[in-house]
Image (cartoon, rainbow, N blue to C red):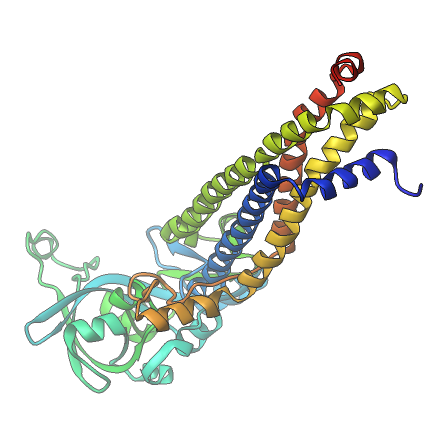
Length: 422
């Protein structure tokens, strides 16, 4: 006999069980339950991986990975500073900026905005904003009064490329300003007429708040010298290590700065993804556990049906470990078959999840993810070998644990009592 005795007996019992009506139904239900749990868990984890990837590649292509913002005095000689920062091992690129809050006005319409003065060429090395232009050209930002705005702002103000709008900014208080002017209760905002030279559509709240102007104009409006900036934006090699990288860069910096990174401004999205991943993993593992423990019912019925066989095996000298292993193998087959079915279906669905959801949206004319609310308008997916392996191993362990008690009960059958009754 080429296979161990316990495996041989277990396979015989599995084949004979298929002819039993009710026990066969219980066995099939446990197998199907495990398959569904494994399949759904693989699909859910792939969707969470997809959101994580979209966060890193899409959202963080616009949102700054990290920023060094001056505490009190502006950062001078920004070109030399940018060159120095780009020599840091984990910094891919750096770019200067000046930002402030303001209002944009067109006729009677007003919209609160964040105005960011950037160097047109340097910004392209740390941001993919030019790829999301829907109207106009990013290069036109070099015009003296040019401004690039988000699609949400353009819709709110009903403006398009070529229109002139009023930009209202906080008043600049300089050292030579009069005391009365500095202490005005209602200071007069700085007004500047700008021309819309481009509109970008990225998705989410960024479209509703962000306005770009060129760095020279922002310096003029906010009282900075030609080579001074408010801060330096960083693009780092590992976005999920951004807080640590920004701290390391700031440690070697020559000026007092505030440290900011994307985990402070948009970290809630990443935390939400991790929380949903954990909750769904726990819930679906419990689903698999419930399905696995149907194996208990199947094996207990099998033990009751096979008492005479167990008694004969014991009489012939079979060890308790052999009998226990036979029934454990019989129950484990449910887990193995369920895992195989669930894994195949889960991988198939996970690889095609985006297309499947788009087909459902088209068929029923619904939209599950809106780019006006979320930063993407599709359901992303990314299948990882680690998730599949972890899911399968967990399901098999739960299936194996479910077989222990019924298999142990089988070893407690007394041959004398069973054969005497027979």
